[in-house]
Image (tube, rainbow, N blue to C red; front, side):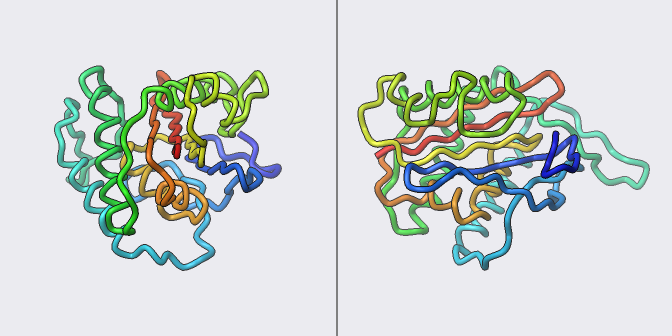
Length: 218
């Protein structure tokens, strides 16, 4: 995968789209705490949401403590080895509600109203998550040239589309949410005070890579 002329073959990448801002790809790399794969993120501004960041960290810890149905492999040093997060059928139905609860906890800390899951936004998010995998490219435009606004309208959503967050990663839903909270543009989508409806979906490849799409609607 090319990154301004360089190669980043196992990168975790995320970005946001809002109707008022042009698309920009985020390219600063760092290593995640739990995995061997780097995530692209931008940490060039101080994070004002300290309490929110701590909350996300707590949610990540709780997720790590949950039973994923996969045995933990131990390295020769006696420490857990990094493993691919494989989403089981039993987990699929719980992920959307886990993200919803986490987003609403963050919104409560920020002093903005909660959101609810929306079937049309979920459908539009699922379409784009799979399409990004087909394109092998984390960006906001579909293989047919559609924008996020086009996709939510096709799915039958009649409210305003406020923003779309995307990610190409090997990380869990809460680690991905934490990454979005670190970046001003993706954080603003999650904490948009006009938000009332949420769509969240993913597509996982056989190798474990996950394409996430989050949509915020008014």
